Image 1 (cartoon, one colour):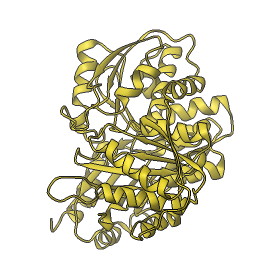
Image 2 (tube, rainbow, N blue to C red):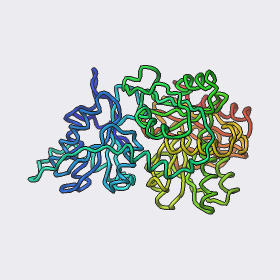
Image 3 (cartoon, rainbow, N blue to C red):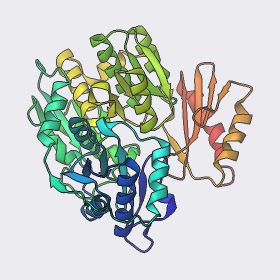
Image 4 (cartoon, one colour):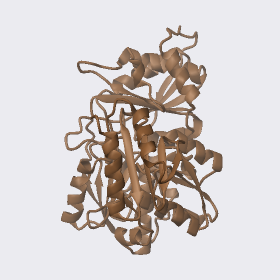
Length: 450
């Protein structure tokens, strides 16, 4: 069983079990068969990983059964963060499949796909998987095989090779894994470094007993903020459920904007390779563009979403890319996103420069921002049009990625989520009062009938 709406723009995500499941083991088996057929994997191999969700092993094995019936062979890496699966795909040059629902609540599970070398799949290929999942594909004569391997140590070694970690001063680092996959990868990646780790919720538990695995929500950062202050830590790294995103909290317990992190890593990467391209999305702070220009780099702007970011990273051979949602992409990591590598870069910057996180952030241009504000609406397109009409005489309208209005020293974005039934508002300006005024005006339109 598979409800059609579990097929999202870039992946699969839906409820498993409970009173109203949206997909099940038979569905996973059908998706596995569809994946193998769509990718043309008869006689070939792919890598398979899963996060710590309770349904992950059963679903991934059912998926493997479906794929093997279509002649595909499975290299199962077992428990893995999503970026560890991207690594496995790049390391083996094979297509990849990761079972995860990222930051969604415990009842969900999902699937992310990639082409060999962690390249993003195309919308056409995603549509083909969906189409074939509803076809009763007969098994092929030669069934695929199954084997297991552990690539965690190789993943950690590769990350270490990409960051200048020598000569770092000792740092005290809070790591909030949120009972997600960072609890699996942190000992291997951070354990060998000159850091004292204060671990929060590092036990793998897909029921998320301490807080939801979504660091975009401020309430889910409170534990790490408190721990930084109580322990006098230099920094906190807060990961989402599948650990492909990393949020940063400074030594005061204040949240560091992902745009600040993007600007800092971009500047460091451009020092290593002057003139390189940096990819950001439409709602990344304009401060990043200013920092990149000052460092002699070029900015390319992407629509929001990891498949779009990855595609532009490959097209422009960009050295680095960053999104407002704390996804960070690296050319030397096959253009894929990895929260752990971003965390390593920040630790290296602090440890080698002898500066605190807040001091590094203070070196950058400052803009006030609303943060992402989500609203549930019945007719997103109509609401976006109403917001555009209200602001069209004050700025330039762009519909490349939802609605973007760019005014004099400010911008606001209203776009639909790729993964949830939400309309997302972001506002940035030079001062807090302008942000508040623009935010309140836009929200009054968005939420008028809610």
